[in-house]
Image (cartoon, rainbow, N blue to C red; front, side, top):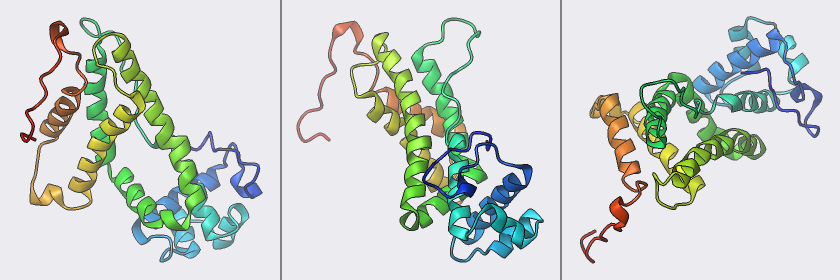
Amino acid sequence: LFKHFPLDVNSPPSLSIVVMSNKSIRIIEAATKVFSKKGFYNATIADVAKTAEVAEGTIYLYFPCKADLFTAMLKARVNGIMPPVDVPKGGPGPVTTRDRLCTLGRRLYRFFCSPAYLAMYRTLISEAPQFPEATAHFYREGILQANQRLAEVIRQGISAGEFREVNPIIAARAFVGMFQIFAVSQGLLGGQRVFTIPETKIVRTVTEIFLSGLLASRAGKPRRRPARGSR
């Protein structure tokens, strides 16, 4: 996760590390736990040092201030923003784009429901206004690239005639967003306690709702539009 730390010539030397040391990795892992639990302003370098089991002064050797540590933590999490898009081949019968999206839907929902993701999401949302550059980097290098990979899968489905013509990047963001908001509402907002829904039902229903707007028309017949006033 930390081996491809982004090189930014405009950042302080401590944030321009391509291959991080084991100690700096431990510090960032500890920072993730502390910031996720306490938030940026309530967390202290002393808290991080205690969690990482290093001296407080050691952290300052790698990260001059708390803001630099928080920024480094976000950048280090970029590569883990989304599970793989590709679905392994080799199963019975041809793998359709629809099959790939169904498999990815299960991966996405489990990823978004994971405690690690939900903790990072909560921290990112609460601190985004204070760290616009770091969060923009997180979006550009993590979220956007993941959406572009998924958009390519949808584009292949369009080319194969499985899906109708749509904007692939918008469709990709919609697909991801449906699972993300469901996971956040169930995991962070108490939905799982108030109204429990099995994972299999969520994944199947959300995927089918999404695909019903992507499937190519049958026998060349366009879908009937709903009558005015029926929506």
